[in-house]
Length: 156
Image (cartoon, rainbow, N blue to C red):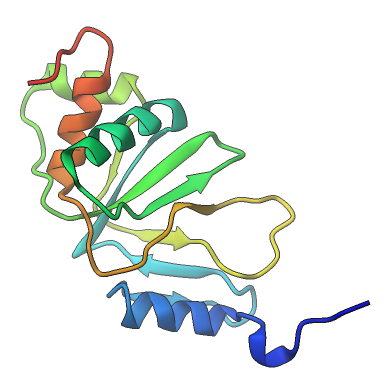
């Protein structure tokens, strides 16, 4: 049986360094679990159900907003878009209710977990579209696209 030489095996620390250096993500790795996280702040996130997220990704692809760093949560059926933190709180109760009902969540603070190369029997998170650069789409644009993809909404 063939085994991969240790020099070619990706480690959580190596992945964390890639996220930091290439993607400008403020990541840290938990040395005991291999879990990679980052603190929301300059980078935020928008989480939504995968079916809605697919439509949002298509709309953003059509607009030429790429590359899109998107984390998938297969067991939960959710996707998380890593975005610039430019989303202003909405003062419109109907808009807030619409997003709430659609299970769209804006993450402005707290920890955001990223995929790690540590084997994960539960497949908790994976890349739908990997972070490959420091580019992140506008969070406001992702929210606008999500709202336009919801029933009863028409794109502007």
